[in-house]
Length: 75
Picture 1 (cartoon, rainbow, N blue to C red):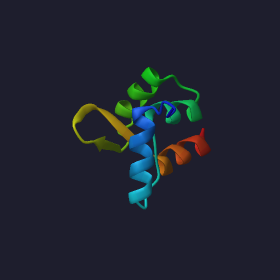
Picture 2 (tube, one colour; picture 1 turned 90 degrees about the vertical axis):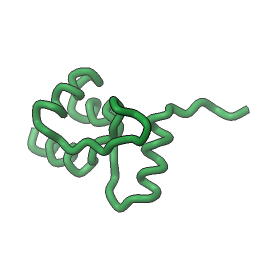
Picture 3 (tube, rainbow, N blue to C red; picture 1 turned 120 degrees about the vertical axis):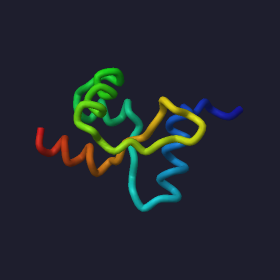
């Protein structure tokens, strides 16, 4: 039996395999900055971070790991 894999994680894995830019889910980015998923979404909009769109979904997106690492380093 196959284990459950979160859809966001599946998209992230596919994106990272085909791109030279690493990405994080909103939840992962929030955890690295000490924010909840909802607070992270507000933070992304407020600070105009790059949203990597996920096809066929208006409200889902991934975030650039390099931007999150830069913010985490300066926090």
